[in-house]
Every structure is written in structure tokens, then in C-alpha cells.
Length: 352
Ligand SMILES: [Zn+2]
Ligand SMILES: [Zn+2]
Image (cartoon, rainbow, N blue to C red; front, side):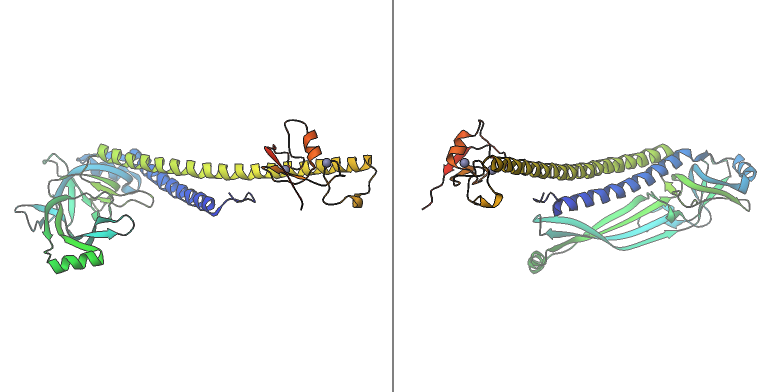
């Protein structure tokens, strides 16, 4: 806090940052909790013979937000794993990640970081079918890569460490970057995997389709069941709520603190002003008693008796405003006549 009572730069920065973060976290929390509410309200549909009839009777032949659980079935082609025999899927993602240690100049520690240097995702059209193989009703999954929570199964991973010579090690210490190696992985959505899809369900020319829903709704495709998906989303909501509450409390307390300090400063300066007024009034009364003109009082004369020279300093306030006799005649506990703070000590002044 500055002497003027204005908030310091640090306080303004803290207040602005915490307010901004509160607003950001709150909006994330709101959107996440909306997602959860919509997920809870989504219509649960099971893949059976009646599904087509149900949709043909629904207005627009569409359920805007539906949950379906089913088994991945290929339509025509399948993708074969490049590393595992007899492993067939409908989505295959190959990733190459570079892992390295980077020297942090602030913490003086080597931190492990990774960077995706190459990623390729292949897909083929696929359906979700009933767990019961006799049922032929299937739902085509449209644009599966647009889905959030698309957790694929890791079918292969390998790490190729970087071979290091002595000279390269010295070079790495100088540059502050030490490569560890390349991480290679293959992830797949396999034929026969159980999948939960949440999206728009439409009947289009006798073909049932699950597709990304209209704006504001999230498209989910996950190997978890509906309950686990809901639990995971709820945990996310809780985290954002905690964050926004913590930062909200920080912003409010900073604001309260700054306002309180300003109010205290304002009150103190008002008190000082009124004390000064009172003192002047007393002085005028004393001058009237002594029948003196305002101009005839010397600026160095004692402010209490107006006749003798000021001859002592009051500590801790430091005011030189009275003579020693007037100091002694001040009522106990002795207070400075100018600022009203307690006089701990009096030091006589000697002019030479
Ligand atoms: Zn005096
Ligand atoms: Zn004083």
C-alpha cells in the first residue's frame, strides 16, 4: 500500500490476474457442467430390431442426443496392425514422439519433455452392432475422429534410445538439451471392442447413423461404458469448480483488503484534519484570552502558551511545538498537542 492509500502495483496485478482466472475457470466449469447435464439427459437407446421403427416414428427421424453402447463391426475393409499378427481394427493411429531432457535455468533441474514428431491416423467405415450377434441392426459411426475422449487401445510401443558419444554428451550439457530417444506407438480401435457413442442418431435412407451432434453438444466415442464416461466428466467438473472457487476467494479477499486499506487511510486523514481544526480553534481562543493579534505571534513560539519559545521535541512523533513548562503541564497520559500521539520521551532543545 502506498502512502496515498492507493493500491500498489503488486496488488493490482494480483487482483487483475485472479479475477481473470476466476472468469476463465468459471466459464470452463459452466460449459463442462452443461456437458454433464446434457450427457445425463441424453436418450439411452439400445441396438435392436425396434431401433429403426423407433426412429422412423420420431419427428425428423432423428434423436438429437442419444447414448448407444455396442460392439465395433467392420463394414467392408479392416485395418491390420503393422506390428501384431491377427489384430484387426477400424481406427489405427501411429505416433512417433521425441523424448528429451531439457535443462531448466530457473529450477536448475533436467525436465523430461516429449514432442510429437509424426502422427498418422487411418480409419475405415465401421458400425456399432448389438452384443447379441444374431441381431443384424447396426449403427454407422460418422466422423469418429471428431469425437472427444476417443481412447484407443495401445497395441504396440517401442523405445529407440539415442546412442550418445562422449563429445555429444558434452555438447548436450552446453546446449541444455539431451535427447533420450524416439517413442514409437500404435493405437487401435479393434473390431469387437465395446464402445459407447454419444451423439446425434439419425435414420437416413434406411441407414442408422451416429454423427457429431448440433452445436453445443459434445460428441463422445469411448471404450468406457456410459457410467464411467459420466463419472470421468463429473470429476472434471469438480476440478474446475474447485479452481474457480479458490481463485474467486483470492480475488474477493484482495479486493476487500484494498478497499479496507483505502477506507482506513481515508478515515485517518479525516481524523488528522479534524484534530488540526480543533487545535487551531484552541489557539485562536488562547490568542483572544491574551488579547493578541494573529500576526504578532512569532512562528517559533510555543503553540500552547503562545508566549515562550518552543524548547523541546516530542518522540516518537518528532513535533517541536511546545515549551518545556507547557510539556510539564500537559495532563497525563501526555499526548502531542498537534497529532495526539502518545509522547514516549521528551528531549529538550538547546539553541547555541
Ligand atoms: Zn508554552
Ligand atoms: Zn506530534
